[in-house]
Length: 412
Image (tube, rainbow, N blue to C red; front, side, top):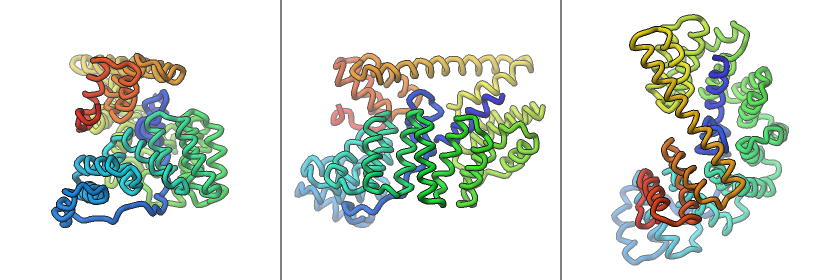
C-alpha cells in the first residue's frame, strides 16, 4: 500500500502532457510554466462582435486580415476554425511573426502540440531575444518528448535572462523529465537563491526530493511554497499527499482530516487524487468499507488511474461473491495496463537509441493514442509516416488526427 501512495503523490506533483520518457505518471508535470513574458508580436485583440467585419476583410486574401479573423475566432471559442485561418495567414505570409505566435498559443490550447512547436520555432527564429517564447517552446518540446531540442530552447532563455528564477525553473523541468534529478535540484536551488520567494522552485524541489525518497526534505520544501502562496489548493493537496505516506500516525491523521475538507476549487483530477489517497489512508486505518467507497469515487472521477484499479481490486477480492469477480477483473485490467506501460518504455528507449526506426515509432504512436495521449501520439505517427510511408502508418495517423478534430486532407 505504501508503494501505491508513492505513485499517487508523484502523479499529483508531476501533472504537462506526455513529458515523461518512461513513466505515464509523469505524463503531465506540475512543474509550472513561467509567467508569460511581454511579447511585442501579438496582433490586436478582437471581440466576437467584430467577427462579421473581420470575416469580410479576409475576402481579399490579405495575410493580416486572415490572422486577425483567426485570432478573433479563437478568442470567441471557435478554436479549430481559428487555427485554420491562422495557418492560411502564415502560408500567405511566412514572415508574419504575430500570426505564428497566435497560432502557437491557440494550437497549444487545443492540444495540437506538433503545430504549436512548429509555430513557436518560427517565432523564436524571428524574435530570438524573447526569453518567454523560448520557454514556451521548450515546454511544448518536452510534451512531445523532444528533450535535446527542449534543453537548447531553455538554455537560450537562461542565456537571455540568467538571473530569472522562472527560466531556471523551466530548465529544471527538462532535467526532471529527463530523469537528471541532481542537475534539476542544482538548478532549482540556484533559482531559489536568486528569488527566495519563488514558490515554483520550492514545489519542484519537493517533487525531486520525493523521487530521492527524502520525505522530510520534500515536506519542508512544500511548506515553504505554501508559506509563499497560502491560498494555493494545489500546494495544500501536495502537502497532504506527502503527509499521507509518513510513518508517523499523527501526520497521516492530519492528512486525512485536511483531505476530507477539500472539494471546492479542485479539478476533477485533483478530486480523484484526493479520493484515492483517502482510500489508502482508510485502508491503513482498517476501515475497508470507507476505503472502497473512496477508491470507487476516485475511479469514477478518473477511470484511467491504474493504481486505483490495483488498490480497489486487492480490497474487493477477499470479500467474496460479486466483489471477488469485480476485484479480479480490476487486477486483470491493471496487469494489461502494466504490460502496455512496459512495452511503451521499451519503445521509448528504442526510439531514443534509433530515432529512424519507423516501426518502433508507429507502435509507440498507436500505444499513446490508445491511452488517450493523442498530442504525443500524433507527433510519433507523423515521424513514422515520414520514415515508413504506407497504408498502415497513414491510417494510424489519420485516426489520431481525427480524434483531435483535425482535417486529415490538409494534415496528411
